[in-house]
Image (cartoon, rainbow, N blue to C red; front, side, top):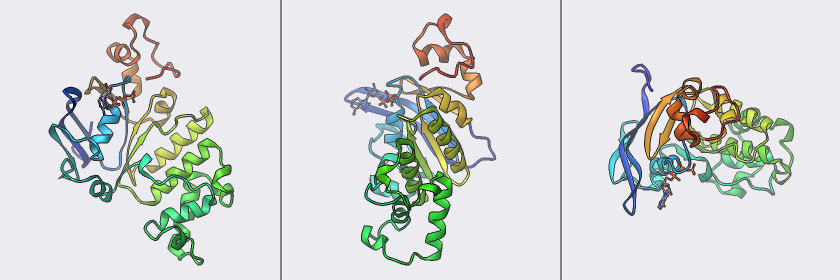
Length: 264
Ligand SMILES: Nc1ncnc2c1ncn2[C@@H]1O[C@H](COP(=O)(O)OP(=O)(O)OP(=O)(O)O)[C@@H](O)[C@H]1O
């Protein structure tokens, strides 16, 4: 789904992943243009998590290749893939409950200097600006000096996302970023993620169709370890084959296009 004018950042080429003979991914190909936002959906067991695991080097394909900026990732150790700027959200250090929101973001912007070093007095101007930008991005300005332990679930997720962004990842992989969130928190998360696209390339897995709709991004549907369809949400909702595999319902029972409460 990339046009010839958009350079491909991530190029998954005919990847097959086998777990003791069971093919979780079969000859799967997917291109993600630089700076784009892409959503991955599909029924349980479709292979979404396995695909992300393969990109970050946690799982190795038996055939095919994953190329990132033209470089093959399939033989690189996980830490080298991470060092290329590929970040899966759960890989980020968790929020430190005993620190304030501001301190957490400060720690994240000074990654590698250790927590104590990170909290030394006198932030450099560019670090202070970076933290201010991240507070703006996450909408947590008003909570900057509150302890992270006191944040609501959604606020903690935004802080964690801010901490990930502080590391300036080129490719951000988000696995169900709205799990456990209220509708309001989900809407704000969609807005935040949309802001990230452009500067970052973002690949999101989620089951919540209301969230997917708000992301308003191209969607890839996985089914049985393969790309089943690609398109926008309206087109996919109007596709009876997608409705059938996605919802596990016969075509005649498929929800009408536009059903905002459909779950993957
Ligand atoms: N480590 C593993 N060993 C054996 N089988 C596995 C392993 N990991 C995943 N699988 C199987 O591979 C298939 C794809 O799983 P995967 O978790 O990638 O699907 P998914 O689309 O992320 O599903 P869900 O939406 O339920 O998280 C499933 O049938 C799953 O049981």
